[in-house]
Length: 326
Image 1 (cartoon, one colour):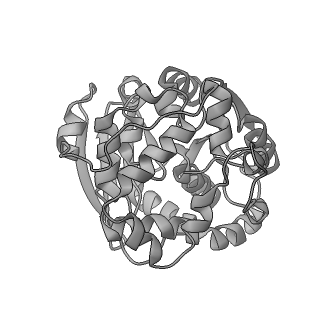
Image 2 (cartoon, helix red, strand yellow):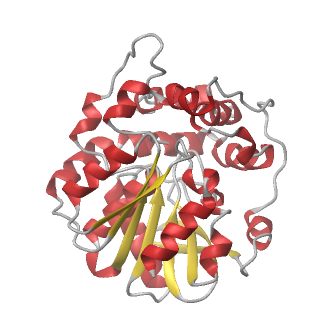
């Protein structure tokens, strides 16, 4: 999860939830996730003929859910979520596109190797996946960590990228080193997970089997309306991240940010059309970053969203993607 950049570094996610709701949001009770349907069952529950599948690319087995017909559209989620984060927009998008919602390496039903969590390498995974599926060029949309990977996909594989949409989160750059470790009283909380996930071994010890606590806290502080993400959804995410291997993989996405920042410095401006969809508290920063990183930028504001845009305002997100990708 990333709630960036400069304004968010000062405000923190707790402040954004307070600003939207007028009072601190309350988390759902229940730290221990219950049994959840399989990815196969979840995929089949969505309109659009979706199916759960796997593909081996470069020694890594990736899980993805696909459905619909038309030009390929790759959907890339973030931390601590899975492909299920797009469940509310996938049926609408499948009416026009062949939707491919993928679990990144380390996520959900995909392999969780020891390394390869820099965004450039994960983008190479996705490029190999779409080529293996027979697609020469795709539309790409990513949220949170997935937005970073979507940017890296476009930067490293421009010939394979028709258009790219980035939801709420730009690619890491030097500004990450300006994050505040301590906020003034009353201004919210720090983005503690960026620092916490830099640690070795301790996150696995503390979060193994306890990810429902983490997920509830993140939603309580980053979701204006708690009813938009139910207990089953939270249990699905918690089950996906509860193992030591999954916790470790999540930390590696953040630990790789130093390499991501180095890679970003070597990227030129994106020349394909770029859509930025920003929540009410990140819109201006996202626009400023993208206009410096791309030549053809379009922006949409999800004014009722804090961070989890596809779950908070699915109609806005789906409509923006349909209009942009054409």
